[in-house]
Length: 145
Ligand code: RB5
Image (cartoon, rainbow, N blue to C red; front, side):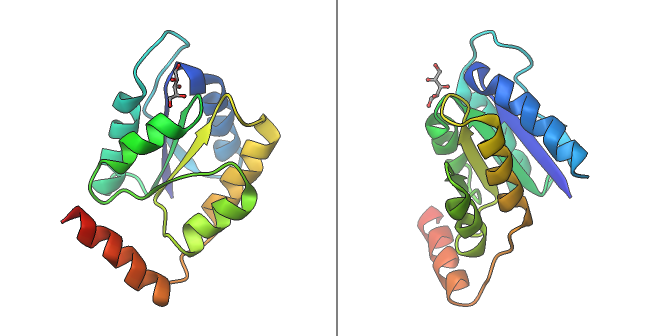
């Protein structure tokens, strides 16, 4: 499974930690930047990761900015992306089981590294349940047109 990861400057430190953590857990990781803490614009990175997911170049995406809000909004503008901003383990599991989220967003200025690791691993290991949830996810796609 190939996981894409991207962040702005405020998410850079957590991105580096999550990248290493995923590699240690056997995931292939593609890094979409940013590559240092110089100020950049989060929509650029939410967009690149989102477009790669939508194109099927990567299986899932991880996007990180200061709060996770701006970069999740940006990724969600890409057709086919369902980005879930998660700050707890239950939401991370539900984002897969109920929403089939193909991108997870986290806040680098919000979460500690250990909690972020638990959230991320839960997200990566949880599976979409389908059934009634599929109908609802299809309705999200209908909104996109
Ligand atoms: C950057 O200062 C900050 O605004 C950004 O990382 C993010 O939190 C926006 O939603």
